Image (cartoon, rainbow, N blue to C red; front, side, top):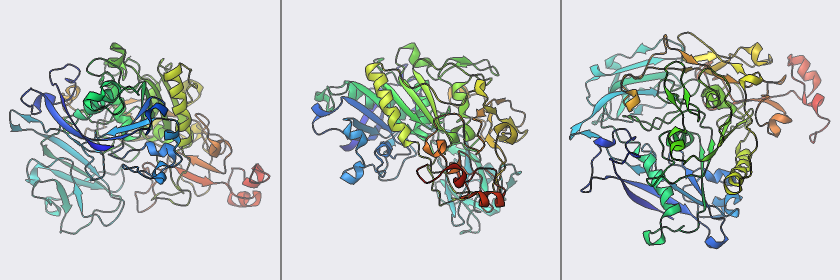
Length: 584
């Protein structure tokens, strides 16, 4: 079932009042804020043969991802046997649903949502905006802005350029760039047709107009799932009476949204009933998705080289209610749902990448870097040696080494079953498997004035491998100053500076003599390796030098024979020295 749903929310309801700028959204004759969203429902033909469970697919940038659990190609219109892949989820009897929540999803086949624009008593709202711009090609000649400029006066904006992240930005003169659309929604370089320099970093600061009330997307998800589990067939619910338990599956961006979804209390519906019973959150780290700010944006994500200066990695990071030792603020991602007993049981699954590029250890430590006991309702798992994006061991994708193909999906499938058993039957889940400070994890060392830090090679245990560069590059989690209105969702200081700002401690797993991680869930590629696999990677010359290679990891093969290894000076044992034959 594909279609649209039309909803409305009460801006005076305290459950909705947390949505930034909701009071500035237009209302209908009943005083309600309206929205529309794309919806998708896939159910067993005979619901009596289903398992009475619903998986909500928190789509990523408008693209549903639960098909990955079936080893299927991604599609928003699964209608053939090929689209079902192995049928893993369907054979278990689950119904699957999704809806649009991301206002930045705009393509025809994406799951979209139409949310209102905020105005102040019919007056246009303006405010500071910031774009981090990188194109890993030499053919792009214009860059779209998320929000249109309030004025085409170039003196009210600034474009800068630099080659590497730690280089000093250089201002691009006003006569070397321009707005290239009448509404100020895109910029280009001059003369017209000049491409942006491949992999160089551009930053654009300007005054934007017409912020959308993006947090309405949180309410849309809440109300859609609540409708499917609680509303009757008289209201058009095709699943009525066949949903005993609800789960979510999310990968990357929507997992960060889920962190905000819980923090803002949206796992309780307008009747204070639980929305999601179980959450399978993949690669969200302890970050948010910036959805509930004025001039919100959902199109960015922080990694070693990019987007450090957006309000993604901000306290609270952990589920428990904690006090930030630097600010004195007390909060936790589960705080609101704890208050009305609507906390979901949750598995946070992350790869090695999230520890290197998103300071993921803060998800299960306090702000001083001390280990926290697991919450009663949450378990944490790291897929050792895996990267954020499943790569290809024959391709480099702008990096210095071949990319990492360790696939976390088999872990997701197993943990979905464990999560279901925990929710449905009370069967206790597997213990958390993550790096711990108390077990010898290695802390990052901040670099003064830099957006990133380093992990010392000796402390990590990283071997010196011929033709492999190790810099220890890692994301540093700063306490940034986004301006006085930040707690109310109004960002007035963007981009903030890291100069003189304090940092939160973050750490990664130590590695063994091969460079493979010790902590976490060691899949066969790591437990019985033929290569060193990492969750971090560096760019090659022409693509940003030794800066971080975003979502990629590395696949660094072992030499085939002892003689080849010795000739190369590789300290890692060869395949010949490890295994008698391919079967081990």
